[in-house]
Length: 219
Image 1 (tube, rainbow, N blue to C red):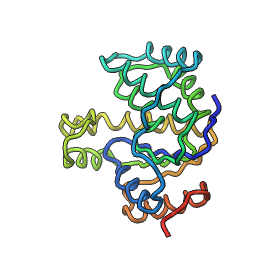
Image 2: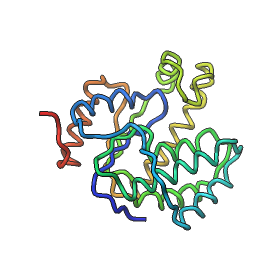
Image 3: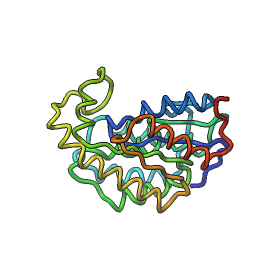
Image 4: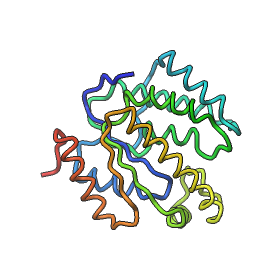
């Protein structure tokens, strides 16, 4: 489903503890016109094909969770915002790709074919730029335990359990980014949290200058 928006959307992706928010905050200092960090709420209408694909993926998930319908509703709402846009560019830490990851992560089983079919429909109105931040599981686990309590699904687990779960979670991200490479025109930048934050911020800023020259930076 093609996008009708005019202003670009930049989305950070990566498992909790990767350092997405730190880099994103620094980029907002460079580009103060960017809105975020989450998808704005909006009244929305869902395309029938998108609903059917979402239902197919949902029914393949095991185990199911009580908040799954809410996760999929937020995902479809985000797609509507991505498709129609707002009157300003967005830089998001909880965007479309991140919400798709959240809807599927930590399952013992799901249908890869149904995930691919749903992702193909989402990709037509996907972000213009994806910044994927990778992190070693042990580093992410230590960061999750050190930060104040938020709403991460991993925060009440011990570090060993977080490390065990982050391996498959990172593999799911690799799958999603691969699908977006195939089915969307998004420019994709890969960063590693092993690199200094300042170096990652500079790489991301240079990438945005090339990919989205219309963005206005701070003088």
